[in-house]
Length: 225
Image 1 (cartoon, rainbow, N blue to C red):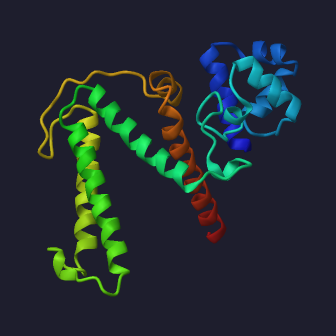
Image 2 (image 1 turned 90 degrees about the vertical axis):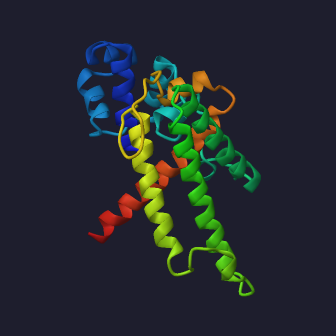
């Protein structure tokens, strides 16, 4: 929590364009203590967290790094008291993918949406093959790519699409893509919430879930070292 809180606390102050001294005075703490909070040297008590959330107009969940949505509407299932149903999780993934494709289309690119769709298609194919392989009665001859080769071929195609997605997202030419003039607009979690009030919660929940899993992996790697 400390790193998420300190990073977010400092970011909100910079967004508000106020000095550390001014924020400290408004929040009823010394500048030195606020500096410690923003640099992760001290952990705050609950009263300060609530004051800071009210002061910056965000939820405590957002301030504590529990949600990527400023109103706290995208708290992942593992962080909520009531566990999300499988149906909710499926809905989040479907809506997040739909929002992502719409964002790509809104840039005006004709290539970026295509590359994202192709990327998703390969991932779907690969996962289906894994499920199919688990069935002892499955006949591998129905697929063109051999059982001992498809995984590597899919990985290679996925990396190719990732490279092309990064290139297309910048409107640059290369790797079989043409240069494009794209429409640029803010894509921060806060702006996404404003632009897609009905779908943003799904995307932000997925982003938070993956962020949590990556943090867990990073911590486990530290333990190994």
